[in-house]
Image 1 (cartoon, rainbow, N blue to C red):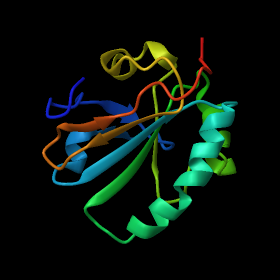
Image 2 (image 1 turned 60 degrees about the horizontal axis):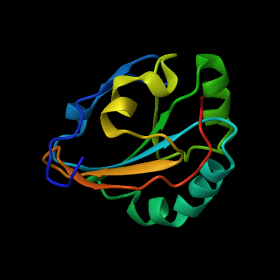
Image 3 (image 1 turned 90 degrees about the vertical axis):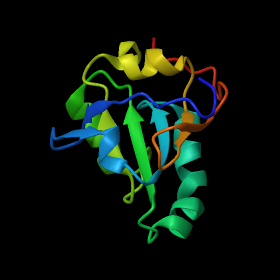
Image 4 (image 1 turned 45 degrees about the vertical axis):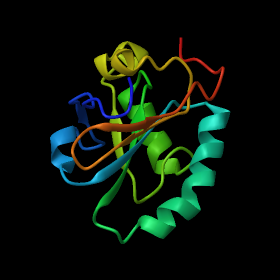
Length: 138
């Protein structure tokens, strides 16, 4: 996926099982963080992102979205609540038991985690991280 191409129009569940769509963020810059429970590098990224999130937390044009490829909804909710993989200002989403087989993961070709994706206000890819970790979910 190259910059300028349309982003995958996802619909994923949050911790209350409400469906959240990419179109919900129209006009906003969206930084997506893809992770899984047990990923050491994912924890490090969460910690490293704290100053960035703090800097932008009051900017209504910037949204932070965490997408977990965990296989168990309740375990994922525990991980979100722990704060080790997610920040309070992030919107936490789940790939619905499909883990890394979910269409959003396949669409972007992610095979290592954490992986980052930046989407501009027009719903287009601005930047996709290279493989950042050799840790795989499967």
